[in-house]
Length: 267
Image (cartoon, rainbow, N blue to C red):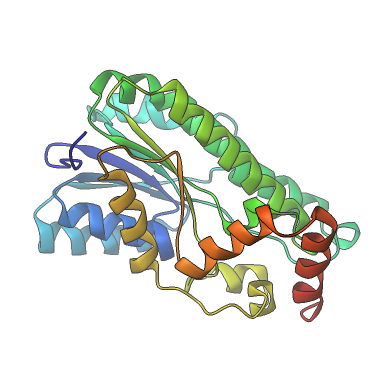
């Protein structure tokens, strides 16, 4: 495989109103891709779309949508058909976390978290993957997290949802080999986005230095450009080291206790 040519492509990005999603939009537009930007905050999407049209001369379409609704993937697929848009690449970036002891969490918030972080990722991937495979020149990126690599006390559900995303995406990587579609699970560590505002505390970062969204997205696109793209990539050298150490040099008990001590400071 050679580097991905995004010219003539149309990439659908969920959670595109800020942070990593907005940065994916900027970097893909710079590479020539037209865009469909999806998020709840339509006014932010409109502003970003105008910026990208002016700077990169691409088409940027906006969809204001709450991904906690039933069948978001089919709803998006139907809307794209009505608008005459053929999606060749997808970035599932939308997601949020809940911080604190699981038994104290608001059940409705947990249900929304599952809907966005798990159900929507699977549903949107399923709605578009057949046409992505047929087009055979684009990418499917599902944003997981470093939280996928171990249990996360005080963000127990979030870690579990991201483990799901990682596992699902790596399986789709294998299923899609030979089709031309490049599938990647991207696992950022703590990143300078609105994530911690939604969570309600920066202590959810466990004291880690925050990466820039630009570096995170660059890591993903560079991995996709490899001759033999991997099924998953971790953004940040220290994050990659931590994941390796966790797999090879520590027991599950030790890992869980260590993460629990880090997040306990914010409890």
